[in-house]
Length: 346
Ligand code: NCD
Ligand code: ZN
Image (cartoon, rainbow, N blue to C red; front, side):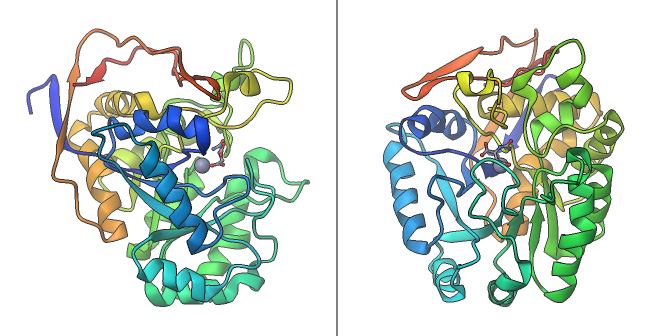
């Protein structure tokens, strides 16, 4: 590694939205370009609920991969009030499914089928604890009276901690954490608890989204928080604790559905995620920890091998961000943090 070049084991993305159909065909190559594997979110319409749904979705993803691309979709099941523990067990034991996704009902895009009664899914949690299958958690309460900026911190105390106490051995990934409270909780949970962090939450806070005009392409859920939380997230990502790893939460929406009077939540970061992360780690003086965050900690938590291949990034003049990618489901605006990023993937 020289100062201006860094070579890493090929990264994985531990939280990715690929969608389906024409949108998936358009966005998939941008993840496959840089990432070897990704945990694929199941919030399609209708959601990926059963093992049989996951097989079909995986086959559609593999069928949409460009010629020569090597990319392994790691499938997840969308937990509903009706999820059958035996189906979860079979899907996990066959190697097909790598996690179950918990969306509190109504928390975010396409989450209407999510869980509203956590006691009602207890049998699924117990099966998962028994077989070591991780639960990926969208950690926000959804009670309408709770302020959107407080929803994550309250979820930890009201929902997550009670679930973990009631189900010893349940492995949990706190997804896309956005607060110092979540970073602190995740760092003290031992080897069963992990957290993913996105690019946008490491680079931006709510002022970036709201001061001087509203920037819909910075709107995602959980929402960007007060600036005081960002240093805690950077410290978690760059601090070398193996409980933290990358989940981009790259979440494509057609540009016209974001630049809209009621815009969709989600940042499409996949094409530029690694460049942005190298910038964040470089600024923090922690380039030597980038590989842990993007390539090593995730496989370790999931009990999967680290990738053999490598990827190299180079520092130079600020990179040109693509404005959008074209898909047959419309143009999708690419995340741009609106500040210089000097690292390009070779
Ligand atoms: C995601 C989406 O669009 O599916 N949106 C987002 O803002 N992150 C859903 C999610 O992960 O919350
Ligand atoms: Zn997501």
